[in-house]
Amino acid sequence: MKKYVAIRAKYYKKAAGKKVIAHALRKGAHANNQNVTKPENQNQNIYSFDDKKFNEIEKKHKEAIGKNPQKNRNAIFETVIIFSEENFSKVGAKNHEEYLEKYMENIKEEYGFEPLGFALHLDEGGENVNTHAHAYFYNFDFKKKKAPLRDLMKKGNDANGQVNKLNPQFVKMQDVATSTFEPIGYIRGESKDVTSAEHKSKEKFVKDKLAQVKNSINDSKIILGEQMGERLKNENEILKQVSENHELKKENKKLKTLNEVLKEQVQKWVKSGLNYIKKSLKVGKAKEEAEETIEEEPNIHKDIKKVFYEEVSNIAKNNEIKNNYQEIKEEQKNKRKNKIKI
Image (tube, rainbow, N blue to C red; front, side, top):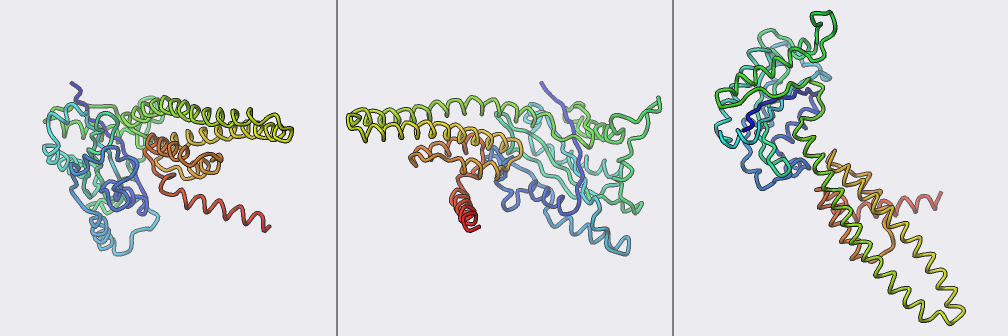
């Protein structure tokens, strides 16, 4: 049975950090963000604080130093604690609360960060739940009257005088996590440097999802191709019946050319839709790709368009195209008008 616990760390300026906290607490629009792939589990999430806590600690910070803290400082420090799902399920979510509180106190004792609180998430993942918690700290040591992060960022040199590949402080932070959660069955996972972009489980999820997308988009191409083929077949049949008339023969030639153009447009449209899906799964938002897909929209029956956008939105888990279709179309229409005026 897998029993690992691992962490990754990040830090933020004040404005960016407060947005990250709003995401973690599922506040407002963040309740339905792209990372939430299992909304039915959202009521199982556990939160130990609210978004007012930061302002309370910042006020104490101001009182402690006798002036306003620097606006451009690194204000929030975050560690994401990743639990193996097997051991997490065995222990139970509720039994992790006490140890998450202990972990935050241990980090404070070791480094001086002031705990804000944690958010335990059970509403993310692919086939399996991505069991993890976000632990947030205010970057100020009230005993030493300084920001701990500044010291933590120094990698130092190894025994050979070379700069350490990994920051020893963050490697040690993994040790703190291991010792804290060891009583409930966890063992050490992989160390992560503060500059790590994504933890392994999310990378695997995106990789698997992109593989599914590739298969799904191929199926969608076949369906769309069949629909388009049937329509073109019917149009060609009509043209064949009236081709005895010389004028209609000319019209037939024009329509064949239009069909070739239409095929090319459909290919560009499908390609844009694929880019939209890939960007959505990697980043969450894909506004430019949504605009490009609608821009490449061929002149075909609206029912076919509807089927295509439904498929693309479902695979991408992103309703940017569906929700903003009319708005994007209107913006594109206005751009064309402005070009004509110029």
